[in-house]
Length: 153
Image (cartoon, rainbow, N blue to C red; front, side):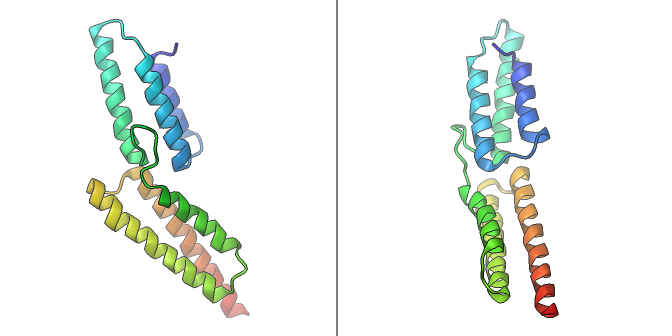
């Protein structure tokens, strides 16, 4: 059986060091880590306290990841926005329609951030802020590129 340190190190590696997982993968890693920690049998009072602190840290990280204690993605529509971004970019729509769809997607991201995440947590969890900002940057780049293509044609 793995030690608390080994479990925590593996979680840290998978979530923060390896390639950033999707929300769904992060939820699975989170749930597996909780399950592993709950199987640990502490040997002394210090280890009991360390296990308790480790579980609390994992749960706090879960909030930042946007997952529940059961490994369920709290905001799956963030993943759907990411999929929509790819779908719009690969669509056969004309340039103006693509630009409009990207602008609508930007509005959706703003609504998720301002009306859901801030309302729920008071702030936007770091992990989700990174995901939202990465999508915004990609959309802004694609809109700029489409506008250049439009002016060159």
